[in-house]
Length: 390
Image 1 (tube, rainbow, N blue to C red):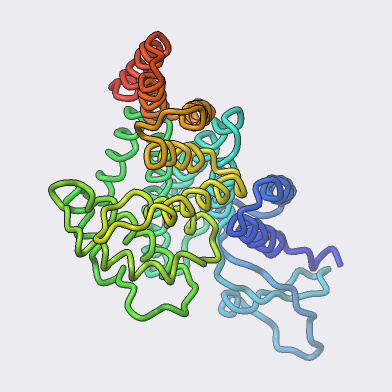
Image 2 (cartoon, rainbow, N blue to C red; image 1 turned 180 degrees about the horizontal axis):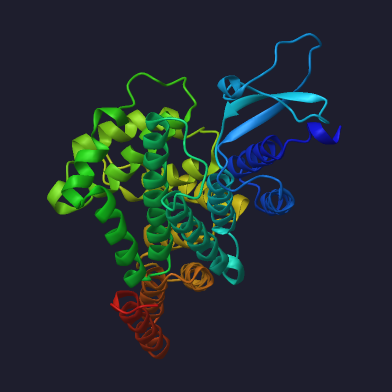
């Protein structure tokens, strides 16, 4: 029935469906579901932007006592020509849901080819613009008041969190493109909202009890996944000479192994395999294990279309398996890493890849090609580190 088509419920279902495809890493299906979600959002013209409630129709009961304004927060009376009354539930406002849709849209595009990646930042910037406009509307006095002080505080907290989350996404994504000015701009806005941090602070956060894995080896939930990502990040931090602790790195990696090597999320498996191939452990993993981990990372990156992971995996493979190796296979590996880094568009990895390509040419005795690749690598490095990098 038309009156049973509740836009909030329709959009929630479509949003959850999109989230499932995102978790399953199905890029093409994500875009299809994203379009369906955006179309339904555009169709919801009868849903007020600031209305933070959901009205479910219920049939009017004969002989029922008249409803009043005192009951409207729970049961709202329908109009004289309306066959229904309505159960009223607290819900997100349309503006909030629109912000979530734009956030999801950016994430859906983040792993696609370079030609469509610019849309990622467009979506996130639009989400921030909507958030800013909504904040101004909430302070204008021309909107429906929130039902309670507690609800007002909750919504203000949510707006601040999503503001920080979007800027963190923008900073991380901009870093993959070596857009350092944009990284700093976004991080400055996060710091203004929640404070500042540094490498030492990162270690403190990653070792916080909230990210302890404990004995939760059978759990498969968001909290555990966040803990796994925190510990993998900690392992990379511990590669820095200031924080180097080989025994602790080995212990921590062994704790991660049973949780990550068969994880349901292919990108967590990919990150784990990259960690295996790059961190310092005692004793070092066998070369065959490193090879297997790199091939697994490559296949996982290709499966989900993650161009950034693919560039990293190819470069690490060249570094770990073909350093100082003479032969066509070594040169082919270096060229593949260089090509993929250019497709991804990250100046840092482009510089790393062409630097390794230059070295591969050098050990082959190809001085002219080595000089050209080295010059290109230096140019990419200069762009990556430029303060005004666009």
